[in-house]
Every structure is written in structure tokens, then in C-alpha cells.
Amino acid sequence: MLIKNVDLKNKTILVTGAAGFIGSNLVMELLRTVEPVNIVGFDNCNDYYDVSLKDYRLAEIKKLSESYPNSKWTFIKGNLADKTLVDKLFAEYSFDVVVNLAAQAGVRYSIDHPDVYIESNIIGFYNILEACRYNPVEHLVYASSSSVYGGNKKVPFCTDDKVDNPVSLYAATKKSNELLAHAYSKLYNIPSTGLRFFTVYGPAGRPDMAYFGFTNKLLKGETIQIFNFGNCKRDFTYVDDIVEGVKRVMQHAPEKKNGEDGLPLPPYAVYNIGNNSPENLLDFVQILSEELIRAKVLPADYDFEAHKKLVPMQPGDVPITFADTSALETDFGFKPSTGLRTGLRKFAEWYKGYYHI
View 1 (spheres, rainbow, N blue to C red):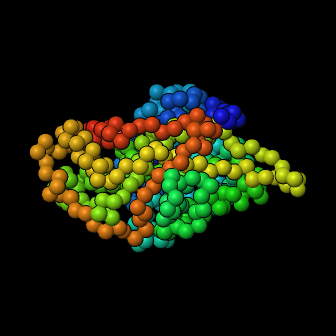
View 2 (tube, one colour):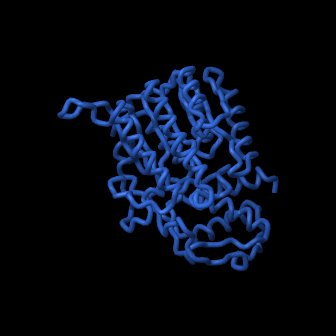
View 3 (spheres, one colour):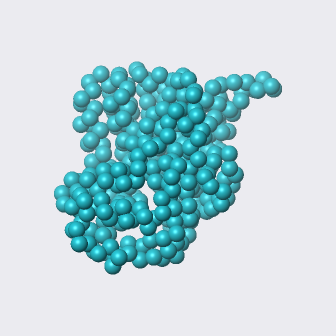
């Protein structure tokens, strides 16, 4: 196991995408478990999905932060593509650790809205790297994605696998992030770790994700579409597991070393964070439906078969995602372990409360 070389206590941590699903949960976990700590959250709160969910998450953070008076929580609304603003932030706060979770998400959306992905995922990340270059940080952790594996046939997906054939613009931007981070780690000795997230789900998640979208449609009596005629498998990873993984990774920055040529070896690493257990989409829908009935979101006699339609694969989609998480386990002693039913139960209970059903 790797030895911690970054102590998060008494540090100033920037979390971009702090109003997002993973970002907000990470901020709350840090407030609960690291004290004292100074966390600066940054987000543009765009309307890619219902902004009221982002407001809800920020309100939950604010409420929680009041219970930890020794720590500090600051939220700044802004766009990562605004280089002047990003540079000003880094100069003002002198961040010790940066966790870049701000990104335009969604594979299908990237097909119709490419500009947003280039601005947020490429230019925004470049601005973060430049800021880390001129304002040195102990560790830069950033979100990559399982989508970089594209249509790779070899499973489980391993970080040593070739990832040169993205099947969506979203995937291409995430692969670009890894390449840019590697270059900046090599040139400027910036310790960076990329995390390839696998299908993250849980309470207060993203409404464009299948479990959330399916629930919305079923509640309205609409038909849900199951792609690739149900022959899809996803490595669903519960948000608490993702956040625990991120927190552990933050505490070990890749070490700065020189190579035989006397030049720095890039202090750079990439890990998968997934459940290491792909679930068939049809089984997933079955468990979701049972948990929605249990939580009384849907009536006990709901006819799922009548609201289910099997359709062909969508452009940009892949038939399976499956994470090899052995490196995460070896280096950090951590393996995501929340079962799908447990995670979907928590989502269903949250959904009932949030929407007052």
C-alpha cells in the first residue's frame, strides 16, 4: 500500500464541479472527516439538467458546513473557461490540493452539443493545468471516465489497456485530459492523478443517468427505452464508494523523481474506480422497479412490462463497462463494495423524499 504523503488537514482544497453529483458528495465527505479544512467550491451551475438539484446540493453543503465551525466552506460561481478568473482564484487562495470534477458530462449530449465539451473539458482543464503550473500544488486529482476505453473487447478494462479509439466526443475530451495532465506533469513536475469513473449513481444524482431518467418516466406512465435490446452491461458504482476512493487518492500524490537523463519523470498516475461487477441492464431495471415499489414511489401493481421497450444501440454507446480495480486495491487498500440493490434502495428513498411523493 502507498504511504500517505499529503495531509488534508489545515489545507486549502479547490473542488471544481462542487455543485455536481460527485463534487458535492466529496465536499460533504471532506467536511465530515477532515477537520480543520478550507474548501473552495467552484461551479458554473449550468442548465444541462435541472438547476434546482444543484441548488439543493449546495444548500446541503452549506447546512453541513455550519456543524464544522473549525473548517471553512466558500462557493464561487464561475466558468473554468474564464482564464482570468481561474488565475485570480489560484493567486488569491494558494491551493494545496485541486480536485477537478467540473466537466460537461454525458455521451449522447456530446453528439449534438460539441462546443460545450471543448469549452469545459478541454479549455477549462487547460486553464487548471496552467494555474497549477504557476501556482504549484501538492496534488492535482481530476476526473477521467470509463468512456476512454471505447469499444474495447478485452474485459475487465485495465489502465494499461490501449485507449486510442474513443467512440464519442465526450470520451475523446477525457482521453485528452489524461494526455494534457501527463505533459504538464512531465514538463512542470505537477503531481497529477486521473480517475476513470465507472457509471456513478446514487441519491441526488444526474437526471440524465438511466436510473434517474427511468424513474422519472415510469412515474409519468411513459415507456423507458432499453438500449442494445437489453444486452448492455454497466459497472454501476455507488457515489459513496467513488468519493471514498477520491479522498484516499488525494492523500497520495505520485512522487517526484528524476530519470536516468537527470530530467523529471512525470509524477503521474491513472486509476479505475468501479465496482468490478458489471450488471445487465435488464436486471438493473428489475431491481430498480422493485426498490421504487418498496419505497412507494410506484404502486405495488405497476406493470413494468407495459412500460419497457427494447431498442437498438445508440451512437457513442458501448455494450459493456467493467473495471479492473486491482491497482486501486493494491495502492490504497480500497475496493468499492456497495451492492446495486443497496444503492438503488438509497436512491429510491431519497427520490420519494425529495419529490414529496
